Amino acid sequence: MFKRVKISALKCLTGAALLGAVCAPVQAALWTIIYPRPLAENDLRAEYPIALLTLALEKTGVKYKLRASDRILLQGKALRQLKENREVNVVWSVTDAQREKELLPVRIPIAKGLIGWRVFLTTKTQLGSFSQINTLRGLLSKTPVQGEEWPDTKILQANGFNVFTVPEYPEAFDILATGRANFFPRSVIEIQNELDSAEISPDIVTEPRLSLYYPSAMYFFVNRGNPTLARLIQTGLQRAIDDGSFDALFESTYQETLQKLRVSKRKVFRLENPSLPKQTPLDDEALWHLPAKLDK
Image (cartoon, rainbow, N blue to C red; front, side):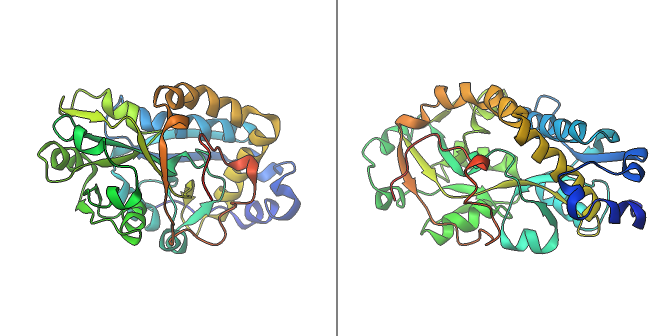
C-alpha cells in the first residue's frame, strides 16, 4: 500500500500554490511515482505519457523517482489496482463519468484530444468493402472490435454500432484477423506503433480514407485519497503549457504520424460521447488539437 502524504504537505499545495511555487515540505520529500509496466519493452504507446509525466515533474522542482510497476498491468487491471491503492499510484487512461467517480483525474488532456480521433485497422481481405462507404449509416453495417471495459466501447454502442468486445487488448487483433469483426478503431496516437509490431497478422492494414471523431480526453489519474499528487502533476503540466514545452513535446511526438495517416484528408464521421463528464475542459482551446475540420 502507498503511504498517505503528510497533512502539512497536503495543505501547502492548495489554493494559490497550484500555479505558484511548490512549498518546501513537498519539495523536500522524495516522490516515488509508479506507473503500469507496458505490455512490452518496445510498446511506444507508453513513451509519450511517460515523457510528459517526466516533464511535468521536472517543472515542479520536486525530488522524484519515476518507475514502472513490478509486473505488466493491462489497463483494466491497472485501474483496479490504482483504485485499491496497490502497485501503481498513477495511470493514464481515457476518461468517462464512472472512471472519474472511482479515481481522481488531472483534467488536462495529455494527448490534446487525439485519443478521440480514430482511424481503422482492418484486413486486406475486407479492405475493399470500405471503399463505397460515405455515410455513418453505411459504416454502422460494419462490426468494430473493442475491449470490454474501454470507454470507447460505450461510445460506439451509444452511436448504434454492434461492437464485438474482448476481455484483453491483444485478443482484438485475433478477432479482426479471423474476420469475426470488420474493423478495429484505433486512435491516431496508437495505430502506427501497432502496425509496426511483429506480433500482429501481416493481413492487418490501415483503412485509408475514413475516420471517426468523438470528444474524448486521456488524463493522468491517481487514487482519490491522493489529491496532493494530483495537484503536483497538474501544477507541472500547467507550467509546461505556459512555457510551450508541452506543445513542443506533443508536436515532436505526433506531427509526423498525423501527416502519414493523412488525417486532414479523411472523411470524418462525428459521434456523440454521452459518457464525457461535464467537467471536461472543452472550452479551453489551448488544451485540444484538431487535425481536421469538423462539421457542426
